[in-house]
Amino acid sequence: IGTGNLETAGAFLAARSKTQHVVLITDSNVEEPHAENLAASIVEAAPYAGVDLLVVEAGETSKSIETANFLWQKLLELG
Image (tube, rainbow, N blue to C red; front, side, top):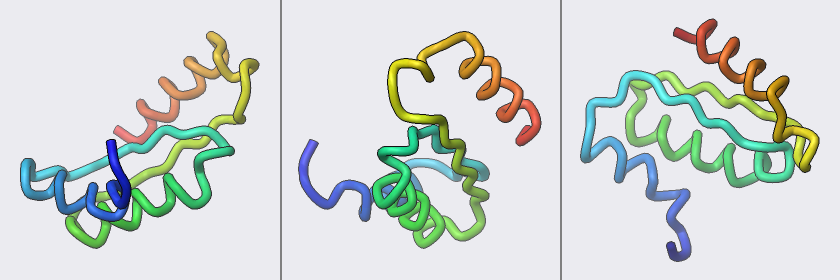
């Protein structure tokens, strides 16, 4: 909790693990700029790590079995 955390999250993660692949799951309201800033922070701090961004529609309708299934399938595809 605080300000500037997204910009430093990549360095925080890289200092604590040898992350090879990160999957960020967000909704369309948070994707730009927050999720994109987080992804950029991770790539900057850990250029060896792959970063994938999965975006679901914002709102209550995305809180569903269909969305969960979509995310599971995407995660399986990404390995």
